Length: 184
Image 1 (tube, rainbow, N blue to C red):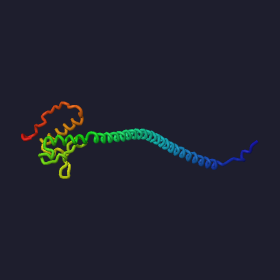
Image 2: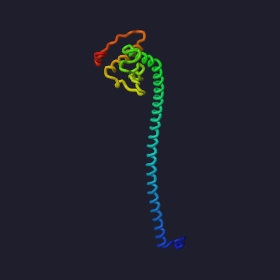
Image 3: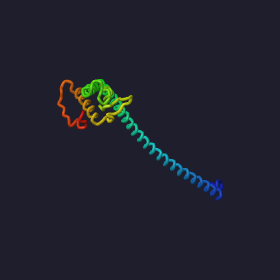
Image 4: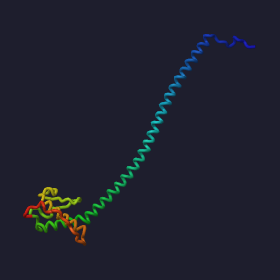
């Protein structure tokens, strides 16, 4: 019913087709291997990007926390600045006046016996004594130890006056004059 010779190919033709198909299969296998490699690289990139996304999320949270801390610090700085100004206006001038009052009681109203004017002595924000002399400011260490003790006593008495304006507290002095010479 069918003629066997109609579409019969020769063995050489079939072998050529088989070689061509084998080459196509090998090429497809190479493409599959290449695509698997590409897929593996893409998966690694996805994992890396996921890690980066998590890191970005952590950093954004950290940034929010830092901004919150910066805001708190800015408010704290503002509060401290206002407190400083309040302290200066309320206490520093009375402290300076008290220091000068006690220094003038110890020496004379015109100046100290050591050659410094009463107004040469100042208190800084940390209540340290500064000496302005000949256009420069020096710390109290510039003075002799005995005179440092006298000026420190005057500054403490001024502080007591400012802190206790209506009362007169009891003061306990522990050897405040040990560094003074016999004359002082």
